[in-house]
Image (cartoon, rainbow, N blue to C red; front, top):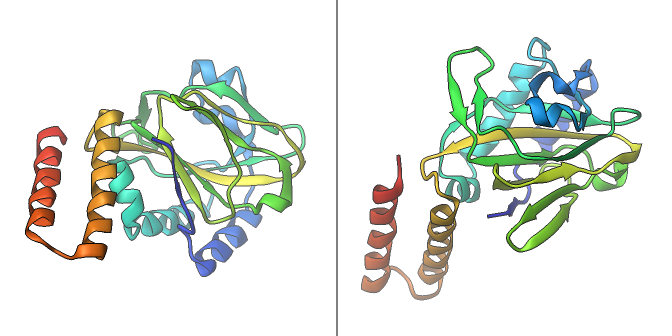
Length: 226
């Protein structure tokens, strides 16, 4: 399931993140690429030892924690600490690839299974040319270039790329989520049911039928969650 989460960051959070990132020094983005991805990855990344990393991650994780849309779409169990990348100049693209299934925690404490990937845009669309996030799914190929502070989530199994940035700089946050529900089709059904229940509550209230359907949702979640 490919889903946009508009305005994940508020204006103050976005401004603070952009201020911190403007002070950052970038390194070769292949430091976190797998064997296949390293062949097509040509960007820059904020290193783990950068002094801004912890503050940036707190801002992103705080925004995720208060987003009901992100929760119902991803049903997160574990989130790999977010990373930050930059596309500009000669380091300006990331060819088609699939994200690694297992990602090592930055502190070496274990692995996170990448079920859901996410990109949080931190540059405004008019600040750079090119740089679309292009994702292939069962419904075709989609190119996305969202406003700063908005995020897109999609299955980590999707083939995707970042097209070349031909002018300006594209800065973003990317992350990997292990879901409580591993199967993407099951996650999609739960998301659609939850959204339908929300609409029903708004239109007809907490009727007996809505209560029963809510029970079905939670019983499915109990059955499928790990």
